[in-house]
Length: 298
Ligand code: HMG
Ligand code: MG
Image (cartoon, rainbow, N blue to C red; front, side, top):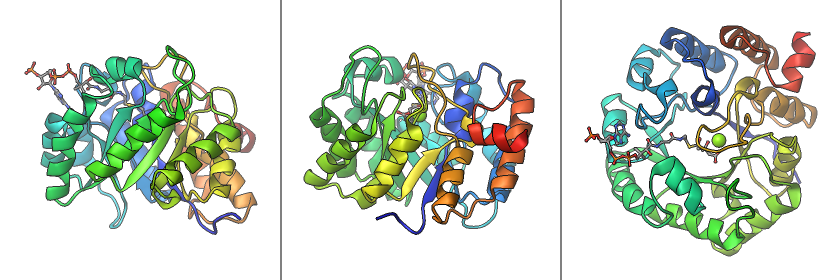
């Protein structure tokens, strides 16, 4: 069966804007986040406390957070790779972080200047301190279904990395199809493999990029397996600067259209969201990649 309600984990301000060539003004970012909250999104990943030279688009993280005046109860996690990032995030007053691991050696090197094994030496003290400070920690696993340099990624390799993140204390795992190559059979197989390894579907979120147009089919497959948290990006913004051939995330509007049609609650006002994405597209000087935005804004 399908769930009655799905939690949309909005990543547009982070996964979206980190990959835009344009550096968006901090005031525009703040307005974007405000408008996403106003459209009914309850979880919005706002920015990253990574090295500013690695992702200059999000170098204004602290300044951005200081400008937000968000409603009580809104969840606003930020990406943090290491203890230096955690220091900066704590200083900015965050209560929720996400660490991001790679399932493959090549991406660990390109994205974290590390290895699959060594990344855990960076994460372990970061997560321990975050939990001590009362934060909640999400764990991403990247390259779950395919890697642009290594090709197919063995399921065991993905499950091993994910299970280690759970052991460290991550309350939720987001399974990233970083380059958007997955098809539904792989999604079912990975979720079942995690369940067999003791990581239940209640701890899994899915994170699809739409490079090959499979994101919605993959999402519906995950929902049928019992997943109830889905990552998406308003207007389909996004990609990943350290992964060739990654295009935008599943568009939040495309997701909401599907869930509305299925009678699954999200709390999102689609019309307000589309208006926001049209406005953001104007700021970026290019049309939204979302089919639903194109259809409704026409
Ligand atoms: P490194 O160069 O190995 O860092 O980078 P280091 O530990 O050797 O430190 C070098 C210098 O950087 C030091 O300064 C540190 O203090 C500083 P120095 O002593 O030389 O003056 N430094 C920092 N400064 C500010 N903030 C920090 C920080 N850390 C160190 N956090 C590092 C290692 C992990 C920092 C780097 O590789 C990095 O920032 N990577 C982030 C890349 C990234 O953000 N990628 C995109 C997000 S992942 C993604 O999009 C996938 C996802 O969407 C899911 C999916 O689709 O699969 C999540
Ligand atoms: Mg991503």
